[in-house]
Image 1 (cartoon, rainbow, N blue to C red):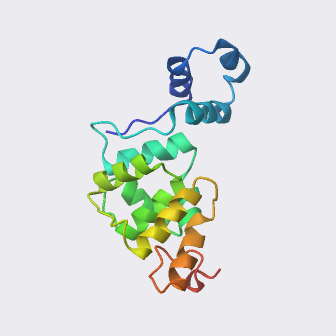
Image 2: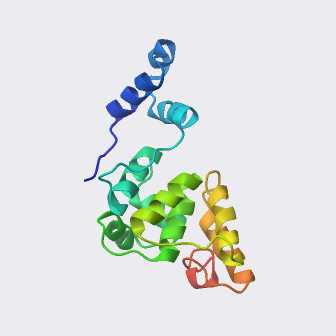
Length: 170
């Protein structure tokens, strides 16, 4: 079951966190400020009991203000493939990792996504250590997936996607 987070839901979340009337009066019509306030006060949310891989990705996308087009640009994954993921049709470990980097998720959220996707990641190997570093960078850098792919290639590993590699044309 997919739960789209609406603007009114964001305002309700702010009221639940702490009824800060002055904040609401000043910023209630600025969705970006409300999202930032929620991020600072409750961090990023985890999936609910009824969430699937696709519904949780959809919720993350709405919560972070991202579109399928933006995700496609940031990851090098086609719009159609992202649509399939959001609809719970198929998933691969490299593309799931690329999406996690693009979303800039917290470690607990990354674990939740891998659980929902029924994938495992061994954090002890060099390849995954590189990917983990870029997951942290993804919180502040829109080009984190491309940089991760370039670093993986330099170390002799396969890139997650073609973004940032010669195959992608950049």
